[in-house]
Amino acid sequence: METLGTNLPYLLRGAKVTVLLFAASLALGTVVGVGAGLLSAARHPVPRGIVTVYVFLTRGIPLLVHLFLVYYLLPVIGLDLDPYVGATIVLALYIGAFISEVTRGAIGSVSRGQLDAALSLGMTRGRAMRKIVLRQAVRYFLPPYIGTAVMLVKLTSVVSVINIWELTLAGREVVERTLAPFQIFAGVALIYFAICYGLSLLGRAMERRIEFGH
Image (cartoon, rainbow, N blue to C red; front, side, top):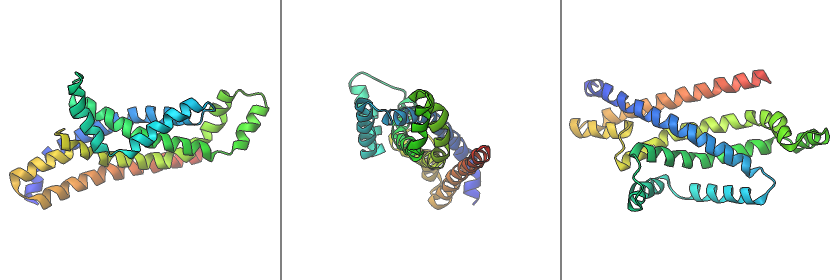
């Protein structure tokens, strides 16, 4: 374990990059996903169709392929993004497709009768969605959203394949120097677990607070 202890600060620096990449991707992905989820609940078929194509195309293609397309294709057409910016955008759009489905499912879990009752009382559809439906949908949204966020933490490791330095790539570099793969990757696994476990605890605390508020 001495090898792991010696290289732990280096791994923790990689973990910091992982957390920053996760946070930026989740923030942007939440905006995209919630927006797409709301459009999927619209009455007009055009926005629903656009969201459906986005969701099925994004979820139907592996994340690694998305990364390769951005990493190799964009420079060919003259668009040279910073690798971290490109990875953040890809992760955000990818996770946004999952958050879109979470949002759609949460809205669908609220009884249709409540929306109809609000409309019958003279509320506009937009006001009824904001005041009645969305407030209740949060309870159904949060648990799968936290699960999706935990999945995103682990998905950030994929960006190491295109030589973006974060926790997984830091671990690979240490293994090449020390030839101690079991110790190092056991440490990497524990760091990922700590991040995901902390996120899960935060999610449960938020769930309890929402339940108490209702």
